[in-house]
Image 1 (tube, rainbow, N blue to C red):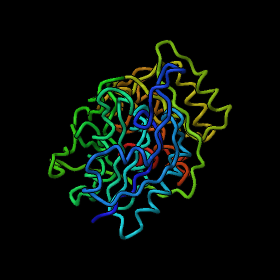
Image 2 (image 1 turned 180 degrees about the horizontal axis):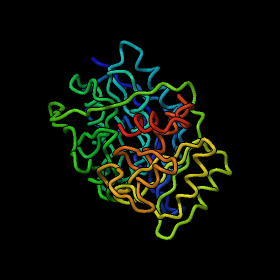
Image 3 (image 1 turned 90 degrees about the horizontal axis):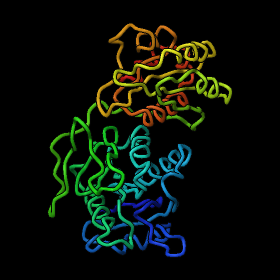
Image 4 (image 1 turned 90 degrees about the vertical axis):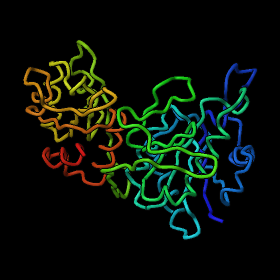
Length: 328
């Protein structure tokens, strides 16, 4: 029987209601999570490793990097077919994408969470874990990178977004749709992710800040990021990536200091592009030293730029080369 390693990190899936505190709190161990899933042992030999037990708002890029190292080390074992990571849903899509950018093995890694706590009526955690282990043990999942598995649906890490604050069907892949789904007897895929990139930084060294465009915003947040010694800045613009014109002076100052500035879009699909030529457009931002990102959200673009600059810091002063990497 195949072996699947389950790394637990915490999140709603591992929480119960605390009457004294009036809300859900971390309370369930990794072993308890696995034990609460009927039939799990029929899918694979499951080994649970507790990485952490925190709400996902406590996750950080450094923790994601350390988790990646542990996952890749586990997958190097020829007996291991794949890995599952239990995670809170608030930052699940970010951790999944971060792991995907570092995942060079063809063995599947499935990130899973829950929208209901372990003590809630009809918790969705056990079924989600079952599907994630089923997917991680499936030959059909090999070579597809890091996958997000919830509500019986399988998504690509680079495309999935949390779209609802409470509904169990919150995770969707806008525009492109899911990769497949988990049925009772097998895992079914209807498409595969394309254009995955894999990087190999020795350490996570680059600080990158994210600034969302806001109407009437000036360059003050860019200047603050520069004062904090960042190596990169991601600006999440509107639509095609357009931003308030007052930000352009800040972009120029950042570029002059060798700080990479990448424009993302807050839209759920599509990519920034220099369609327009007015002040604050992507064309204007590029003239001031910024580069275009790709289809990833601002949060994901930040993580990608962090990884890229940690591996190749010289790209901060080579806009053409940086844009080729980021807009892929």
